[in-house]
Amino acid sequence: MKRSVIVVAAGAGKRFGSPDKVLVEINNKPLFMFPLQTFENTQFIDDIWIVTRKEAIERIKEIIQSFKIQKVKGIIEGGTERQDSVYNALKVLHKDTDVVLIHDAARPLISKELIERIIDAMNPEIDGVIPVVELTDTIKWIKQKNIIGGTLNRNILRAVQTPQAFWFKRLFQAYEKAYEEGIYGTDDAFLVERYGGKVIAVKGDEKNIKITIKQDLEKMKSFLQYDEMSSLRIGIGYDSHRLVFGKKLIIGGVEIPYEKGLEGYSDADVLIHAIIDAILGSAGLDDIGRHFPDTDSQYKDISSFILLKRTLELVKKQKIKPVWVDCTIFAEKPKLSPYISAMKENLHKIGLNVNIKAKTNEGMGFIGRGEGIAAQAICLSSITLDP
Image (cartoon, rainbow, N blue to C red; front, side):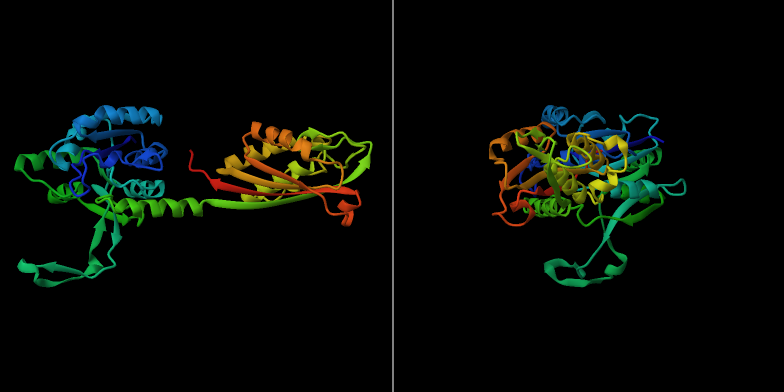
């Protein structure tokens, strides 16, 4: 089944105060690019068609190329009204299209979950699906001179969003009939309903707001900040090893000249082990012992950097990306500060942003007595939306 999306970005932006509303940048990204990337990363969408003002076509084409959007198959000149713009796109869509979604570029925070919910609701017994949200305010209708005409039953009323999905041929037929009669509707579902089509509603998304006036941009920023914070994860790692004669001292992938080294099944790199545990913790994936047990011979004397690289591959599959790691090494001897820059460089090479500190234990405990070395790490990770 072939599914296409028409993204409508041809509005005059009268209430916003600029026809370039969809080009306004939020977090260094044009407004229209937010929904475009979501559709690009939704597996159920096959191609994207953009409708925009003639003057904006070249600029939008450049932006699409810079963001490496692959699914856009055409940029179409819009019409006088929104309905004209959609019709211009419908006329150039591939004829083998089964389902078409119509989405306003001014709704930048569309989610993959909502798109999939709409598509899942499509079936041969209906003509279209629209997302709706409940009304929370009391709704009244107004007569002339601002006199209240009455109160509407909000329990049967819903606010309508986009994208709206339809069987392509049925929507196209509704558009053709509307132009024959000179009918203009407020949305695509209106036309399908007018000509006997059956349209059902699914639950919309409160975050799927429409940018109409400039103050709406602040609402959008608030949602983005909330999403960013809710996607953060923190993990804590700790490790310690005994110092013994006859072993190399390796910390942070750096071999440090010393009379003793750390005892362990692998190379006993105490810093890397703490970092691995912190990263695994931020992904909710238990600890290093579960994934790289010392009962498995393949890990005997293995470089801890190999284990770290495997850890990064593991959390990537869980869509977890380490953003920042802060570490502290506790050692009475040897002095580690001369080697910290080399440790950081090793970790930077594999894509980790780290801060490393070294401290003594002021002569206290097993560290203070020179019996061992310990390290702790805290990792801040984010959930990535990359496909």
